[in-house]
Image (tube, rainbow, N blue to C red; front, side, top):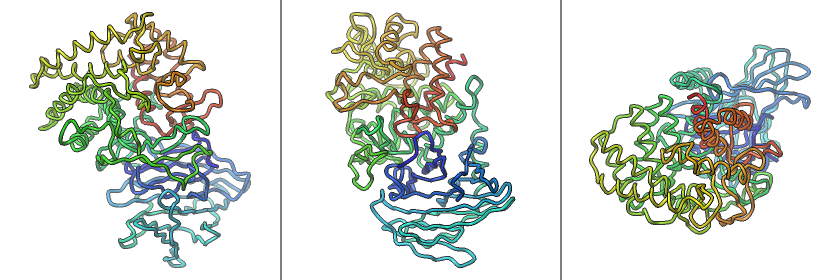
Length: 587
């Protein structure tokens, strides 16, 4: 059985990510990209589905962990009856290689370690052929299955059933390195990695990137870590920003709401760009804009709400029988059926993000305004179509109020760009559609009791309505917003955290329930701050930040009763919402 979700630490080389449990087991790793098939899949099953455990043989050993400064080099200090030692884990930052490094360093006394390596390729559907290729001085294992090869170097691992085991002692000031290197199986076996050089290069890169961040205000440490997480989920070659590092971690224990988040949602990526722009990271914003230009090139009518890491369009959803699911939560899914949905809010989020980046100092490129003209053309062509909305419902499409507001925001940003910067386009069309949408929302998006509703055919509210002031549709202290907040507090906050909507309403067309969505609580912090409820904002911020694990990582959802994280992790939307909430408190 895998560890609790909050027990996992993230490693990243900005191409892929690994999850390491507090017990020293790497239970999730996909190579060579975030969305590649797993080579360690125990997170969605058990050790038989792939893992790499590295810990002292002393069963009474205890551990504590931290990141090495503003990096994703994980330092786990183990204390045993015989001594103290540390394990330094990282994915090496390198332009040409894919190396996972686990360095054991003795601190005091002597500590015996055991490494248990279980390699399972292709989501545990392929047991690789493994053979020794090293020498007695430099032991190495070569594992091959289909297109993938992994080379394990370090202490001698010998076969034990379907695992490979090694044991060795480490004394004070001694260092023992273990590495795992991925390469295509049809290439030559890669040379050993220079561990010392890789450590220095990786530490320097993360430290330099963090040093470029600008932030002054409360919750500084969590804000910096959140921005680092967003960078860790941004592919450094393509610029694509994945929504999370994992697939199929359940929104409810034992439930079926299990989705693959290892892709680029235009919405989540656009919101990440707003966070980047607000904190001086214009180069990252520019890289994503170039990714966007490539991804949606062609007919604006073909725009999707999500893409692969490099802009791939074909992401069919399918179920895997090879992985039983996290703590039995099935099915395990790869791909995502939402790729074929129409979510009308997406164009608005992208236009708002590009407007924010422009105002932060990102100049228009040769093609960037042409890209926005295409987005506005698609918004105009679909302005009267119902959609599946921000929460990707699998029920009947609706005229969701949040989606209508985000379409309003798209046309509003187009009008602003023309009026304030002289950029050319069909301004009168945009102005007319913007004004028509406002009239419609004012008339149909507000219920008889004076609060914004999820859609015109219901009296339910939706946490996405908390974004209305954030895009300038209304003020945070607008009476309709204040009444909406009252309704959210009454119906969506039974335990102090904000749920997305009432699943019992049946709007999403799915069975089962879910837990509070972390980002929604941070949105309410922003709303509280904007409407003058500063004590409530600070209190909810503290409560929601406490849902982060000891390393400052947040998943998609949180169960306040069991105090466990749920859903895919780490979740970009949770972290960027934390940044926005902290910024609101700093005003």
